[in-house]
Picture 1 (cartoon, rainbow, N blue to C red):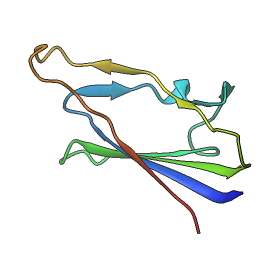
Picture 2 (cartoon, rainbow, N blue to C red):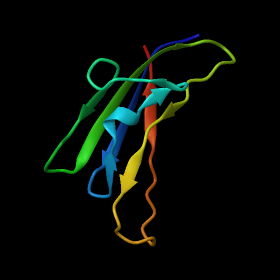
Picture 3 (cartoon, rainbow, N blue to C red):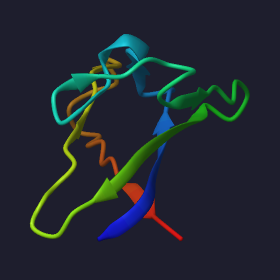
Length: 88
């Protein structure tokens, strides 16, 4: 069992807007503030999304989904999103 998992994702808000009411884990809607943290970092434009996932049993998965609106900065600039997952 992977216990007490926390996922952290740094979002470049100069390139996208995060919709705070769109986050789900395994299809279950989660609420900003009580179920996950979203910390804007105004001047750097790198905001932090922190999602406590809980435990994952062997052979199971946690699917995290959320919506963003991409800025119209040109298709020649791909946006790659990577998150980190950690536990105790």
